[in-house]
Length: 297
View 1 (spheres, rainbow, N blue to C red):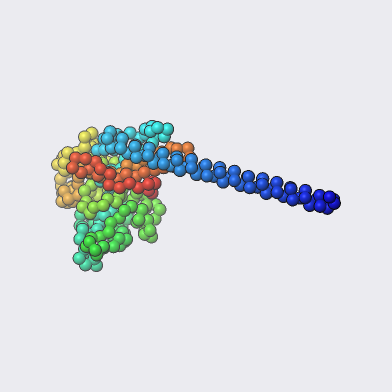
View 2: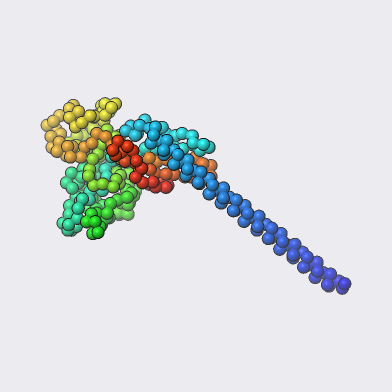
């Protein structure tokens, strides 16, 4: 065989070997990626079922009426599940700003008691009353009436108000622990669920007739079992001082909660899985009304 032909044959052999090596490497990479995807999918599914198991265990064993006493973490199989229980009546429900029925939306105004609490709460964050009332109207304008059912569409998440220019990052940080979005328009705030983080809201319930220091003192004196009713709450207070707030308190106050949100997430080394379970107490039982995957803002 001529030397030129032998050289060409060698080049063909080398090229064939290179192509085979490239194909083998590519196939190996695809195989590894497929294996990684399969492992990731399996880990995600396992995390999902672990979270659902944790949810069932939590509902059957934990004191929902006392969120501060609930277990913070527990091992389920190979995963450590973290828990946080939020009292969704120890907050201001944005949906209470909306009228319950719609006739002429242009003529509708917020229910007066929810209106008062919201504006007082914003005042406690340093906002002047005209600006507070303007922000309230902007919040209401984010949702529209649903003509098919003659009702307003409701807020699903409090983060919906972040689109408003008035809600600056600083204001948002202050509002986060004070707000919630519960699918009902009747206002009922659990006075026994409020904590130090909700002092601006607690003061607003008293129509700002008490100072922050007085509200803090009142909260510090709350009985371990909570206040049984409005009379027990206001008993140590000066009736002359809080007189203007009595009607407001009677309209908005509750001493227990029927709605919660359970946050759960797992510490898997490669997969972050989280579940938010919304819980309602009804007819003596706790039931899940919605499940949302991932953590909210």
